[in-house]
Amino acid sequence: MIYWQLFLAFFIPGILGYGGGPSSIPLVENEVVGQYGWMTSREFSEVLAAGNALPGPIATKMAAYIGYTEGGIIGSLVALFATVAPSILLMLLLMAILLKYKDTPQVKNISNNVRPVIAILLGVLTYQFVKDSIVSTGTLYTLLLVVGSYILMEKVKLHPALVIVIALAVGAVTGIIQYGIH
Image (cartoon, rainbow, N blue to C red):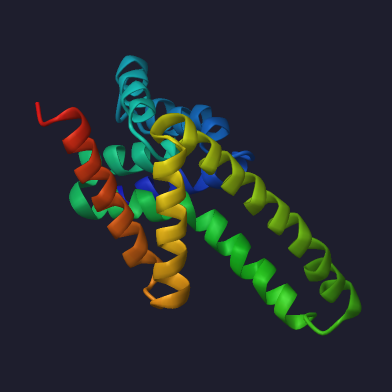
């Protein structure tokens, strides 16, 4: 019974909480504190504070913790699934609709109109990363990483994940050399 309660406690706020984790927190609190009495308001606020201190989406962190405290590992998995299930269901529904109408001119126009926007967003993101890198590590170091990454991916044909790992290793070694190990 606890698993069903955990599922409902996080699925309902996931459906009703438009806007992601922050908008669903009061709904989760209503379920966890008011409906099921698993926590006091003070305990819930402490869990919320701890969740905000960690990276990542707040709703999933809270679901995992509360699910674990109430139902162990299975409870944690149930609460996590319930938190993301509304988004998964909506994406599946929208994908089914898009696939059904993929050959219509309207859907093709959507794809054609979205591509330039995505390209611009990626360009702005890349510019921001390069600018931040130049400020924090210097122009020469940034240029070496960009050119090295390009050569590894385009000429050597290394997988981008491996290039990222190599760049992280180079950054770690450079940081150790520059700042030493303390």
